[in-house]
Image 1 (cartoon, rainbow, N blue to C red):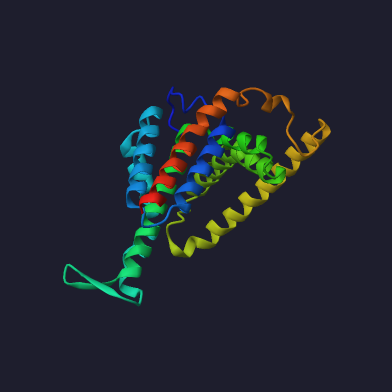
Image 2 (image 1 turned 90 degrees about the horizontal axis):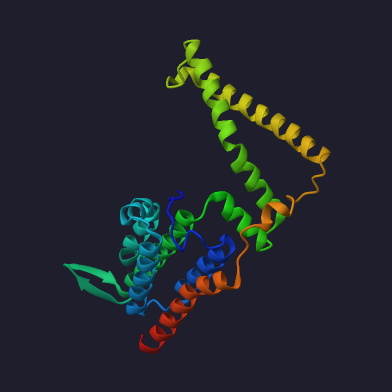
Length: 248
């Protein structure tokens, strides 16, 4: 999902961007649902960051479709919630349901956009390194880092196995050949497990102790200036939330 650009947002250290994204999301979630103009302010802030990062609006719009299940929930709530109702377009809709649906819709959309901006401006490997610098659980970051490194290897292995099946007139599209497809998945799992064992033993023989060498993480750590730049969006969002609480 990374969008290659040269922008101030792309050049920020990953740990600074992760902290900024998390803080912005917390501020959005903590905003009262009745502070309508505050959510408009968040949208303007996100749009300004997207313009600064040179992320196309169409790119964000297409990938924000992941929120569709939450949109469906938000649309159904006014019809399923009990309590006082209001008539809208000839339909009686629950007031609490309308507010609850609005709350889910707007906060979910803003949260998805924040996450998309983080993914669009940070390489997956840099994102994991940023989490490691923030002292995330080592087991999680190491597993994720190895997964990214060997995902292409496993994909190539699966592609070769598929070509070998097709060359033997096996087509997994047919239901009666599902057994062969399942056997191929099991074989791929065993090969991946064996490869992981060999890689782990090779790393242990080279002094691996459960954490990647510090030299791999030393370059590009966040400077004080970068932390200050990354703090601008959360501080602006917090100011919007305070004003929204005052005038909600």
